Image (cartoon, rainbow, N blue to C red):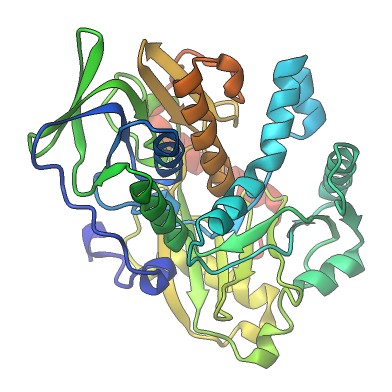
Amino acid sequence: MTARAFPLQPSLWAATANPAQPTPPLSVDVRADVCIVGGGFAGLSTALHLAEQGAKVAVLEAYEPGWGGSGRNGGQVIPGLKYDPDALLAQFPGAQGERLVQFAGSTADSVFDLINKHGMDVPHTRNGWIQGAHTAAGVAQVQHRAAQWAKHGVSGARALSAAETAALLGTDKYLGGWLDPRGGGIQPLSYARGLARAAMNAGASIYGQSPAAALHREGSSWRVETAQGASVRAERVVLCTNGYTGALWPGLARSVITPNSFQVATEPLSEAVANTILPQGHVSSDTRQLLLYFRLDHQRRLIMGGRGPFREPSSPADWAHLERVLGRMFPAAASAPIAHRWCGRVAITRDFLPHLHEPEPGLLINLGCMGRGIGLQTAMGRAMANYLLSGNADALPVPVTAVTKFPLHRFRQIYLSAIIAWYRMNDGGLA
């Protein structure tokens, strides 16, 4: 079986999402104020916020909105960044750091606010996120994290004992944890489609099956050519390709690592079994370097996610480690048939922070999800729209920087595989 022939089943989200709004390909040349390349959370959020303020927007998407990592993740809406507030303030002193902490803390709000504002038909819950700690060092880490966010005004942020963690997660595999009440879960592909519908209702044009093939400056504006020949001419261009970044701009693809995040989902569990797993409706991921993340969806399916091979999957065996973990963490669900196996690529930067680049006037580039892309990229879209309309750099949560390539990027599959093996050995795996 070849990699092209797999996966055999659609992702859980593709199988259960609301119908997509038609987004026919670009067939004639058009003009716009802003051309956005990439129809994931970042691109769609940018388009929505621009169109709501009167800008003429054209979005070019290679397949359909949400096709990439935006529609292939675990559906967990987790606020914050990899770094805690004190570390962000140390790295970005003064007003810049304060803005970044505020931005990081509000990313989950941006998702649920948009769902409510636009009446999106998106299954969602917001009962909080629990980060379980599997080592003593991890317990210290989550206790510190909970205290910092509580200091920054997050009511209800608190450390959890081993017993509390076990009761809230439904597994005894963790030594403790912390609860962030801002987190939640959504059907991510339905959300991407909801963003697309809202953006189009606001006046944005979205063109599916229209991969951007070339980008040229023409005087004071830009021309983005699609693979089928039609093009968009715009004063500004925003690249929001993240884990599916290609060769549209020189060196950009070599500035990120794009591993696959793998997930499995069971058939819907019985009510009796489902009530023993995350009984209060939390979502969860842990402190492992190769983190595990899990939740129940709105129809009581148990979803388990984590890292897999860097390459594209070639058989169901590429998900076997997650199926073993699922059974060991939740024995009551061990016999539940696996109904869906899927994966999607995430964009990881060298410093694990979101990156914004402006290599030439009128060209803005956004990169970096780091496993928190739903909230992060939704909020980044709003920030980029405000920046494009105002020209005020203070609208952006991070400073604009130069594109910096990963060293030895062409060997990324080799050294990433070595890093994964090292992390797995030190994490004390369940698989």
